[in-house]
Length: 167
Image 1 (cartoon, helix red, strand yellow):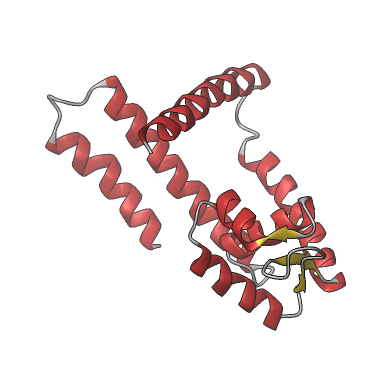
Image 2: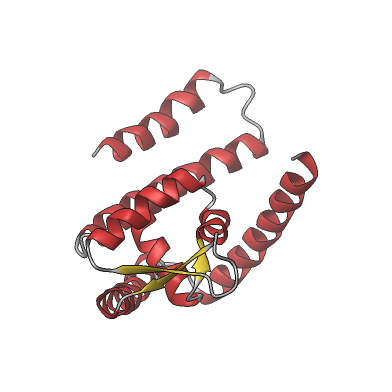
């Protein structure tokens, strides 16, 4: 509900407040931001059916994709600091979904794995999320999806390279 209110405010107040300075770049940014909020709100509601938040789901997803990943690697993949990853992992451990084990050669590093229950939940949520996304994007024609995906890939690569240089 709060996200929908924010989206409405973004859509109407900014466009009306700065009508003479809205460039294509501003409109693109605002549109992408609004889409992000809609997707995020949908994911929050969807993953709630699995007693997961989006960050908890994506932690499970990354552990599924790369068993034995370290806290640092997970932090980099999820674009958040290590203290936040530690909090997420502790909660997943308490729920019996994640196991941490010492690294075989580096005693200072811990490796993260899904438990059997975590594996099962992750696979179930991944499959259902795939179907959910097919439904969410079903209104786009295949050609439009391909063009949109190409453009968004270019934008992602450009933004990533600018961050690498700017940091």
